[in-house]
Image (tube, rainbow, N blue to C red; front, side):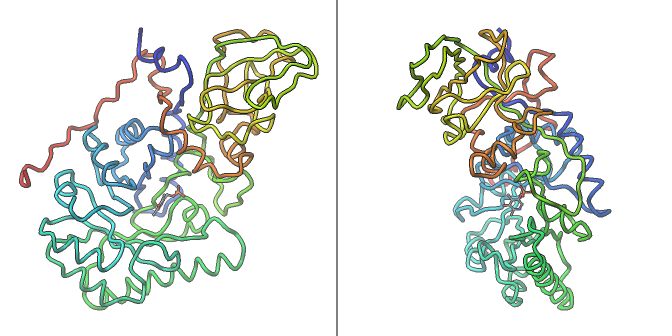
Amino acid sequence: MNNISLKTGRAWIEVNVENLRHNVEILNRAMQPGCELMAVVKAQAYGHGAVLTASRLNKMGVRAFAVATVDEGITLREAGVCGEILILGYTQVSRASQLKEYDLMQTLISFEYAEALNHQGTAVKVHIKIDTGMHRLGIASEELSAVQKIFRMQNLKVCGMFTHLCCSDSRHPDDIAFTKGQIDNFYSMTDALRSCGIILPKLHIQSSYGLLNYPDLACDYVRAGIALYGVLSSPDDDTVLKPDLRPVFSLKSRVVLIRNVKAGESVGYGRRFIARRDTRIAILPVGYGDGFPGNLSDGKGSVLIRQSVVPVAGRICMDQLAVDITDTEGVSVGDIATLAGAEGYDKLSVPAVADRSGSISNELLCRMGARLPVIASDTVSQGSDETRPCCSFHKNSAVK
Ligand SMILES: *Cc1c(COP(=O)(O)O)cnc(C)c1O
């Protein structure tokens, strides 16, 4: 039995590699000259599979990545992903030797953190995070002398400096003014550093919506996540740039059982679906344990089978759900159902499904990254989807 048929027996995520490549090209064209794409592949690349996605991106020429945790960075290195890898979140200082060993760049989340990381004695690459108004991680943009001190710390090699915008997705005038203030604060800091004689490292500000709504910023990187995966966070979001991004993700499953239910009988937990007529039900072996939102139960969600959009019947369970196929001809066991990311069906796009479930695409996608296997569209025809590393990574032997 080949790899693909093993993975597509129950429920799986399909990654459209052509659309991913297309999005890389589109984003590269949307960025200012000299700016590089930093692909954000945290949380299993938003459910697309971190190793699969990053190694495909490597082959497409992407050379900079961002993850949330040190373990995500190590996983990529062990799979042979090359280029820069920036950890956006907190890492225990005691893991500094791993940062060096795996050539990972660590975000400095505060001045105290920088001191502690410097103090442990291993030389590590870092990006300084500047807090310009998000008030989550970072050193306040007024703390010029603290940032100057970091540039002098012996064990910290400052490779970058960045900030994060907290309402760049909004076109509301107040939010635009706030965002412009964040950008100004960041550049006041970098200008002040430059006039103190500090040679500035790589600078970056924009994530996906930062690029789509503030495309004129000339930075060294754009940290793109959701746009790289070809979707907006919410279906009705309006953006200044409207590039032709194409969705990469789809969630698919197979009909494993079809049953007839008589009028008056019920389906599933809590007897929430009561058949009003003689009804045909198809069972899909996928549920909220796979990250498909349970609050799409009782007809709120639907799936695509044989070009028909059919409603969820009753409660979505952890590992199964039922759909009402009474009005759809010819459904049989083994048929593929698409639950999210069905191209050409707006109602089943990732943003629409996320929105129906009271969430955003980013959350919906990464919830599905845990149990489901991921297959790449460019391997289906080959029958095998082994991901070969683009280049082999050698652990830094100096620290062993
Ligand atoms: C997750 C994240 C991103 C990517 O955000 P998208 O909106 O998905 O592009 C960029 N920067 C930081 C700091 C993040 O945490």
